[in-house]
Length: 149
Ligand SMILES: [Zn+2]
Image (tube, rainbow, N blue to C red; front, side, top):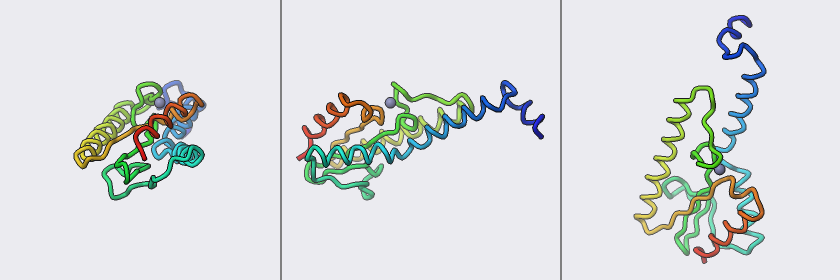
């Protein structure tokens, strides 16, 4: 069994696989970037941005935040799942599968944005990575407070 497994592995090493898998698993967590969403929620509270609702389930794509008064939908996109051009990477294993999956997510994002815009709702997408540094956070908040009331 072990020999069989080793033959199937690219370098015949278990460590390399677990490394790839742990990286993949870490990336998977980003699909519903709970922590980034919570971070943004805390930032809203701290900067006095009000009037938002969490998870607008009635809207296409279920925006993470929705400001009904200003009709603005905000999506917090996980860099991996939404194919961030800056930090999104395609795992080395099952490359076509991941590529297709991410492309499909991006396609869905575009369709949902189009529907929302058609309903007069402005769409803002925030990359997970932009909530990592103090400078980019400030920029994100400034951008949001400029469009919501
Ligand atoms: Zn990113």
